[in-house]
Amino acid sequence: MTSCLRFEERLNDYLDEHLTARQREEVEQHLEECAGCRAELSALRSLRQRADNLPRSVEPARDLWPAIRSSLPPRRGGVSARFPSSSGWSWGARPFGLSFSGAIALVLIAVAAVVALRRISAPTPPHGPAAAPRPSAALASVRRVEAEYGDAAEKLQSALGNLRAERSPELRILEENLPIVDGAIRQVHRAASVDPGHTVDQHAFARLYRTKFELLQQAVRLSAREEEEKRS
Amino acid sequence: MQALADRIEEKATAMVDLLGEAQRGDMAAFEALYRRHVGRVHGLCRRLARDPGRAEEQTQEVFLRAWKHLGACAADRPFEGWLCRIAIHVALADNRSFRRRFRREAVTVDGILPEVGATVAPAGLALDLERAIERLPPGARQIFVLHDVEGFRHDEIGKFLGLSAGTSKAQLHRARKLLREALGS
Image (cartoon, rainbow over all chains, first blue to last red; front, side):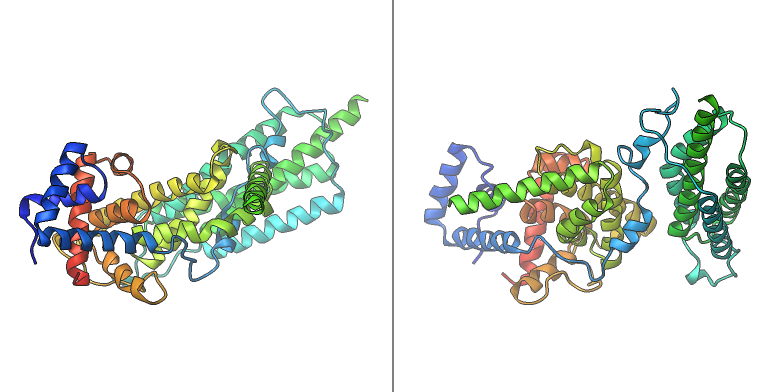
């Protein structure tokens, strides 16, 4: 059975309750007389009911949390809230100290991260056209990570520069390793910029930035503690 | 009835607690929020994206953005609704970008598209409908999902997609027509 053409749109609007009282009345009057339109409306109602009954929740085929977790930057209000602000370190919450072994452990983490990332960011062998990654995808990955961490790292670097305490061996070790991490970051950035076909493991790159972040954080805390001890 | 009200209240309180803890940087609380809502977010992305792999990528992106902007989520408003709006923005933006890169879909806008990937529903009658929705042209599919499945109004859909409410309505009617043809109803 076919519905009346001029009522086709009206039936959708009637179903969705988009008609004025007068238009609704007109449609209802027509429905009483037209079996085709009644069937049409019934079919539309059935489709809408089926759509409404579809499950809203559809679990992904695999657990996405590990990938999400490895890409999450520290939250402002969480870790980042404890950053020294431009007005200086918050002395109310005294920064905890860092042992020499702690400094060494961080350096080892930094070196491992750099080695891993250099391996990942090594130039990719030429592929056929079908296997070539999307142009600029690598650069987009790099920029995304930098957008998350760059600002926080810069603040820490600036805070570190403002603390004038005499450098202890622990602090010197931390500071000497920062350029290594920075070098690896620059290397990945350069590779992604000059070679659109280059691949970047975004999670590994984010880990490297987190390592830099932790090195800086520890260095600032250590430096602040040493400066305070010198004053007292 | 009181027991049900108590359970709802308890659930809402627990959710606010989790949100508050996650807003203070607690990763475990955020993981609990993820576990609770991933199906909802993925379901939405899956239907909007049509492609299983892209839906998973979009779902990840939704939670990354949610974490980044968690401070903007008010505790007295439903977290799931806030998350779903992020999901819609992420999925629609990614779909637009995908179509710009791969114009393949554009040539079939007048009819049902060929099938891609696995369908959303596990079995039963819904499977036919899921399959038919997947095969709708992109514009009609998105509007059908947002209106008839998710329950958004045309003015809201118009804002999401940068269309007038009238265009959204016309696309919805077209989607329903195509679906009925595909389902033989």
